[in-house]
Structures are given as C-alpha cells and as structure tokens.
Image 1 (cartoon, rainbow, N blue to C red):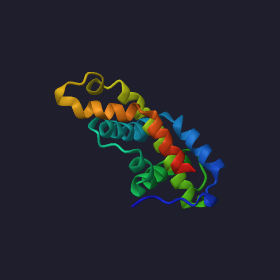
Image 2: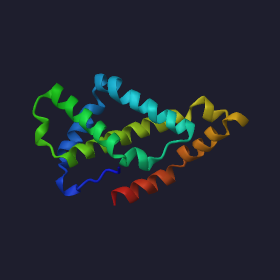
Image 3: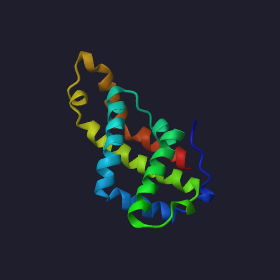
Image 4: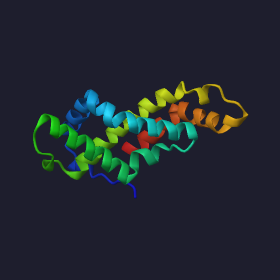
Length: 145
C-alpha cells in the first residue's frame, strides 16, 4: 500500500529535468495538475488530508509519476522505458509535493477556513493543521532522511 523507493536506482538528473519541464508545461498543468490540486484542496478543507498519505500512497504516487513521465516523453521525444520504476516514483513524489504546496496556498485563503463558524469547526481545525508548517517540515525531514 505504501510506496517504497530504492534511492540508489533513482536518476536525480532525469527527475529534476522532467519535474521542472512539466511544472512549466501549461497544458499538462491545466489537464493534470489542477484537478489533482483541487482534489487535495478538498481533502484539506474537509479535514481528511494527511501528508503521509499524499506522499507515500503507492497508487497515487505511481499514477502521478507515470502520467508525468509519459506526457514528458510524448511532448519532447525519447523512450520512457529507459527509466527505472524508482525514478518514476520519485518524479511522482516531487510533483505531488508541488501540488500539495499549491493546494496549501489556496487553502489558506479558502472562505470556509478564513471565516469559521459553528458549522465549520472541522474546517477551522484543518486550517490549524494546514498552516502549521513545522509539522509538515518535520514530516518531510523524517521521510527524506
């Protein structure tokens, strides 16, 4: 269920190239990144978001990595079969990290979070968790070290 990456098999140069290129690809951003960012935002506002689940859930990480790599090679040529599965998973994790950052920025100004009332107490609690960057940074340090 949780993704496992052998960091010895990851080609970090390829990961950086693919992630930076796809982050600046407007079509890919509109077609793939925005819908996933919106889904993460809904989970954040609803109080169902956990960083661990977003960054380590096997199916999500592999799907994001596969879609990102396939779109990259479709647009810029080459063969995606030369990449290891660990490299694709690392691409997926880095793209998800960007999506989480985008969703977190949008969540900070979300109307349900900024103006909590009795009905939206859960959203207010989510806001505390979203804006508490120390917890997120601690989790990221544990995950990558």
